[in-house]
Structures are given as structure tokens and as C-alpha cells.
Amino acid sequence: MSKSILVVDDTRSMRKMVAAVLQGAGYEVAEAGDGVEALELARERVYDLVVTDHNMPRMDGVTLVRELRSLPNYDPVALIVLSTEVSPELKQKGRDAGASGWMAKPFDPQRMLDIVGKFI
Image (cartoon, rainbow, N blue to C red):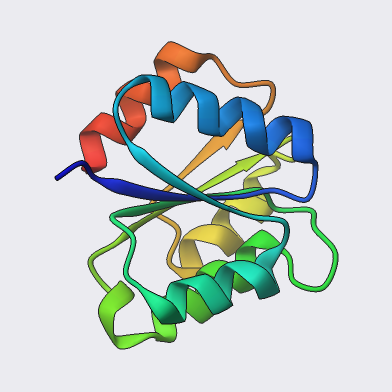
């Protein structure tokens, strides 16, 4: 069975691009348009990894990470934030919330696969 990844981004084209890279590498991918939708999906099943944007309506990425970490089955799951924002302060907020890593947009597909491969 292939590993499952939840991709969360309010920009459909970015979400589809990330999903295509991951699916091309053999991962099963689910998509959510924002943090609220992602949290609903995460309550239904446990994904092996979550890649989330930070700037989204209804719930940002750092808040999503914090909410996922509060779910009992998400303690061991890698949570990666993929964002145009890369300030040290925001990255620290992400780490404090429980993020496993932070990647800058635009992303390099091979680098993304390398990072994902380290976690799952």
C-alpha cells in the first residue's frame, strides 16, 4: 500500500502541482482547499504526511499544524509547511506548533520528494 499525503493549499493550481509531483512518485494524495477542510479530512483518516500552505482563509497553516497535533493519531505524522513566507519568526511559530519542516515556494520538485522521503 502506498503512503498517503494530504496536500492543503487555497490556490488550486499550487495544490494540483504539489499533488502531481507526489502522485508521480507513487504517493496516494488527498487535497484540501484550506485548514478547516483539511482538519475535517484528518479526523476521518490518518495520513502519513501533511503538506500545508500557511496563508489560507478560514485557518492558516500554523493553526492547522497545532490542531492536527492535538489529534491523538497525528503525534507521529510529519507536518510540512510550504509557504512564500520564510521569516525566522514564522518558522519558529511553526516549530512551536509542531511543524516537522518548512519549505519555501516556489518549490523544487526533487527537493520536495527528498524531504518527503526523509519523513515517510
